[in-house]
Image 1 (tube, one colour):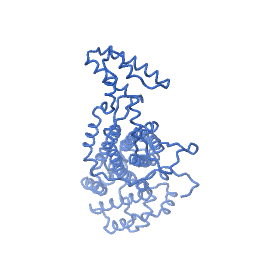
Image 2 (spheres, helix red, strand yellow):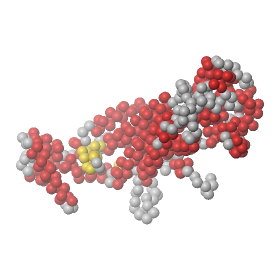
Image 3 (tube, one colour):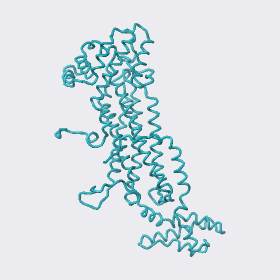
Image 4 (cartoon, helix red, strand yellow):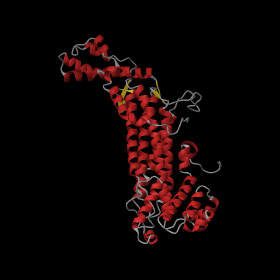
Length: 472
């Protein structure tokens, strides 16, 4: 590739070979030709004056696209679809006169887009499953490992390392459900004419609406679609693009949340993303282990969430049966949305496949705060021994503030000594030490993780890695 012109980082650095091929010119224009083949085939089978030989000739020249001829013709006529009709006719001269019969440009452009987006969503589905498989293994391994919980990024009741991963899994599962719904309800445009009225086919089929319906059913089925939109203008409804990009944005939101959590945890050295043996963390500070993959996930996810705003703005301003101010925007926002979602999920696979937990640091962090975290249980025990809940609450508040002030001066926490010395609690230091076990305060974390994994098991049993081993 020439290095003296701009190249998109999505194509040169981040996206998978599959997704790059899916949105390549070859795939797009070969899909146009496949659509022209199926249109001609359906018209032939339904009685229009198109021969089997013409259909066969079209079918034989799907892949041998003369891009130079198409580009030269487009310079002359300023119309990309007609330029490719011309180039296809050069390759299949006996069929040149029947290519695109009855169709308008959106027959190939819009239906091809729907095919590519459908296939892209299917691929992303596999990548989400791969992330879930990795997270399931991680959650299972650390389901009962206590760790300091946070609310407002302040120390809170303990959770477990696995429970936190289960939260990430639940987010990605919701994305999968949304993606599956969009796939299940995605419709084909079919061949509907210039304003969606099928008027040209009413003329070709001499008013036989049943044949028009059958033609569209056959074309849709040839590309794996069960139904077409009931009504449309010249294009398929642009709300479809909004639904698709919303799914991609949702994936980005889940990925960002997980990666941001990992960035916070890596700051505390509790959990770390993969770090290669010879990886350099900083050009100046050689000791650094920056969470660059998680940062990249967040960076790309922000772009994807912003990119998704293109579709609703486009869908909301379509004029009557169609306008063309959507075209240039969609050429960029939809493919780049897919490439970006692909890149984000590839990174998520890579990170979740190599997470490292520094268990001693995790344990040290939770034990530092455990005297504070255990105060609710201590208060309940003191109430059982005859104490007044409200008075005890106030005493704990006062002792906690005093212990915290001492810690801010660099001294060790003496909260347990203070509580043991206060007769209101009727507890010895030995009794207090006995309840300083982190696993006593994780509630039902382990059971919750196990329940979620059991629920997801059927989904993950047949999941295959979508993109193979990735090294980024």
